[in-house]
Image (cartoon, rainbow, N blue to C red; front, side, top):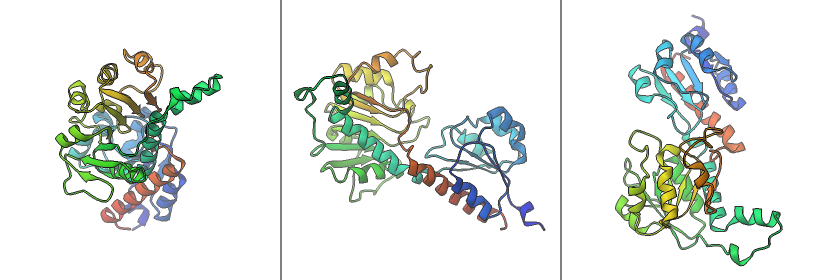
Length: 319
């Protein structure tokens, strides 16, 4: 039997690092690399493929899965799979693969960078100097050392964040609803109530699910005994933006570092009821969902996912 006929055909609908293609070719896996294809075009041909590789181009929803009658595996070049209807895919026997190991270091570095920028007024001071202002006392910074950083979620991203913080003389405590016994040299596992009582800084490292959507609302923020700084580099829908604004107004939040928002990209962002208010706060640092979006992670995400796809094929198909 021709070996190529026994291997799955892979449809790639997003831009990937060439290392992924090289791995497919090394293992003689047939593929169609079409990074410019749109959802309708992909839906028209996906029934011819057993594998789908996507980043964030479109939602792989129930309608798309229904026309993908041959699909056996979906790989996402990223940490989460929230742009895929996970339950519906799994009910159709489709395996989901992702690559959270590939960009966790980039996420950790980015979020620490945002935190340091906030504590040291770097974005504001940079703007002032460029405008001809040399204000020293007004930009006196706050040291990170000696503070307690609370992490919610201690998977790949949470662990990476704790490692990045290890040189700053902070205490890192972590809560994870789905893990236990994970204390290590970088973080100490604590109950959620203890995190509420001790944290000076809160950093979120959890996926978007029906359980975590709008997790951080006004009630959640008010459970902290101290006024805190909030970091979110996970998914925007986990945090209710109105709760952030309320917390900033009432000084319950001393600042926020947000790489993700409930609504992303323009012009939709400008049309929200909260955008203009959020950007009016000098103690809010924003970036356009690029935590984890480094030169190195571009390679590592494709490499990690490529290894998982090849491993899946080897375990499922004769090679």
